[in-house]
View (cartoon, each protein chain N blue to C red):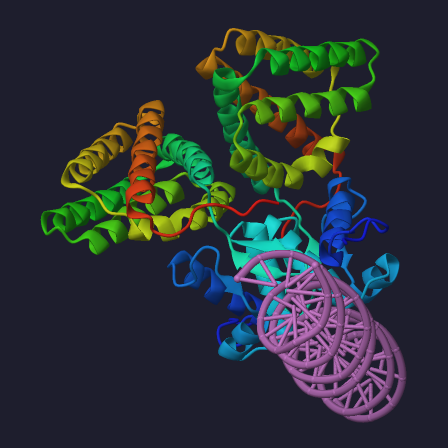
Length: 230
Length: 230
DNA sequence: CAAAAGTATTTTGTATGCAAAACTAGGAAT
DNA sequence: ATTCCTAGTTTTGCATACAAAATACTTTTG
């Protein structure tokens, strides 16, 4: 008889990895922050062993950097890193769009349309957090419609590295309106099953987003962006 | 003065990860094979701790699968997984080609041309191992010419999952000649800096490769490809 | 006082120990 | 014989212990 009482919680190292990932993505653990093992293991109430295993996983995902004999720090992206990462994301989203246009069902399209309208509502209210949330969900749905779990996993991994930047980024009214117009076009291209059109739109859409983030990095000085030399 | 970090060997978990990755990629550790901690730690002369850390990294890379309370096994790909993975690789190589066509220098082009001729020599001699080696190097060089380390890293990670299949795959003369012709065209498109042309060629080139591997999977029955149910 | 040197403390990296879960195998009951 | 149970063994997962490296601190010396 299998136990029904306790929810078979997943392994501790997975749990810890999930929580750390969350905190990095949300920016609570800022880029460059040192991951002190003793401190974190006390905070999370686990021993150092599963904690270290989790950190190694995050390192493989590119979210933290391992410094030999000096522990781990939250990965810090140089401006060039941001440019490169957006370039890859743009390509991956382009792929998603191209495949989604070929494979999307009417139900999925209807759901994306619905999310799109909700997003328009958020824009109308100038509710940036809601807008971002819906925006993320739309992109995730397009990705899902591509029906390629490997693509989804790859996209999520690369995306995670940028999330903390995106969460903080701001939009001037002009950029915001452009983004909304591009989203309009996305829905139309999806409905028309225009694979290459959607691919191109998504690529340029992401490059616009990249420029917005870069602008923020330049002016806002969110945090240090220099990587230490090898 | 920074140390030339040559002799001070890298951390054990990195070392172990490298060696296990190697053995998985080369097929020495076959898909589905169980990674017994005691056995491996004895074989590699390390304790279980760094071994487990290495395994967690490989899991994050998608090379091994973690089974809760039952250890880790070398990742096994279903036929659908192979299809999906090749689809992603095709997109990533397409990206590489597109960017490489825009950014490649004459020196890099000359090197690729040289490798291409060496590959023609290997084809002429029907030396399949040498052909594959050179083929890999050409694709890696194109990727490098794209000048995007994030793209390179992503590509390598996804590629690693397929390497063991590719190493074993065979080519009938027709497919081989087609591949060689496509490689000819690649060099020409690179020389002409035809970004979108090269992208499209690389995508279709990879899809041909995919079909070759799938054929092998069907007929050859290399090893079991079914994933166990959850 | 500043720089250097030496010492103490912290932190990381690896090994080992221990408990719980998963296998194995040998019967007992049907 | 097949299924079920149970005791013994193995294996995994986590915690802890110990050694080496790095950092912080103090003292010494110019």
